[in-house]
Length: 243
Image (cartoon, rainbow, N blue to C red; front, side):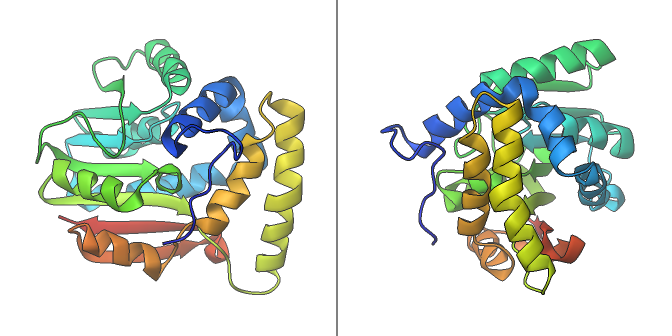
């Protein structure tokens, strides 16, 4: 496994505690910066990930690391499930999600709760599908988190993970490194009160075991038919696995 990268390197808190603090700090500017820094491409990536579940027609979906709920809202529109439950470690992000749920009148379709992604507050074999968008690299223990996702899935249920990865080809690799290491932290510093959050982003992506390394961890966690699908020259990847 790669070394553990934490948001605040000189803080004594666990990665889990630091990640919660970080997202609480940036929750009010998170949506704006997400779309701004990805030039809106994150919306296209989310749709591609959600479409991995179209044929499965899941009715009860768990969205882990749901944040402000954007992935779940998109999934509601595309998949039309009976319900999505979102869980996140940051109360600040969930407060924004709750405002959006109320504004859209979707309280009967989408509910959120505070919870630990590695100790999900749900019974075993409860969900038809589990999704995680840009959240697994923030897990303190990746193997434990994936094993718990497997636990709450019904047999035959599918996990879909959308996460940043590392492009390999020239010149995308070099452009990506420059943007992530210099442009992103600068924009984050201007618009967010927590500049460190946007320095942590490229560090956490660099340390994340992407591609086959990640599907190997999924397999060890109990998933079958694991697949990795790179998007945008490998800037991002969709991972799937069946329980």
